[in-house]
Length: 412
Image (cartoon, rainbow, N blue to C red):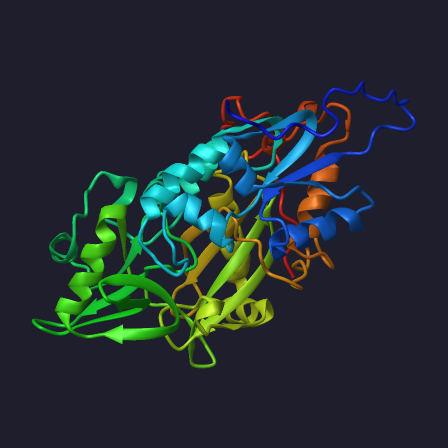
């Protein structure tokens, strides 16, 4: 028999509350107990004067085949990463540094997300399914008119079976420089920045380390220049699905390639951090450096507001999810921008406070989300009645547009 984690307070009668003393909001988070993401969210909830959220462990969800939530619980879904037991259950790998198994992870993670029953969701399962498939996400953004790098694999209709297909698509679409990405990857896992310059001249920049026929994530970015080595990596990744995008030349700050992670909460761009690197991979755990948004603001001049608008338009493609992290790619000169990815769990930016004019000044990304919850759930006893797209019960039909998007104040 499938066991399910029961909602808090199950079996007991609800306490009566008066109109002048409404019941406090009840929050829950599905994550890995003790993980920094869960701890930061818990701190933000407590700092807002609420009781700590009920933590439901992913390992229990996977073991029990689901979890149940009370009707008035507001439920946050958080990352299942950084836990070896959970990684083994989702990917069937004994070494958490292994890259392979992305398609298996995707299927099992979505099954786990959809096994959560009841409650009011801050993360829509259908949105999560798109956000963790780079091919589908690219198509959704492109169809909405959001600027994205050109891609021959957008929508997932083109199968990439291995290196020969990658080379053929690069030639067919006149793309001598591309990013090759595992369709269901995150944190630059398995990503190759690939560039060709005539017959026999090829280079891949990646964090992938090939050891005894297996692929591992490494904290050191390396370059491969032998086509046979690159082909072996791509052939090993292809069964899990690959996404190919044109490599757009990035803007620079202080002689380093630069992009931005912009957090959008309830339809509003609230936080931004610049990431710079001497390699095409700007991820902070791969040696990228955290810069200041003010430097990007100065470099982009009057185009800064357009850049934030673009991030909000990208987030509006996922109207039933409270928070996403948008990877924003500035072109050379800081006058044009494109969206590289939209991340379901892109809010882990400790100690970063909100942008001026965002309404989240002085708050970190988690406090900004808690504040949005408090604004949009005025009826604590019946949060599903709140006029908020991200707060609708997860079984309802998806909304057409983000109901929480607000008119922008002047950006400073």
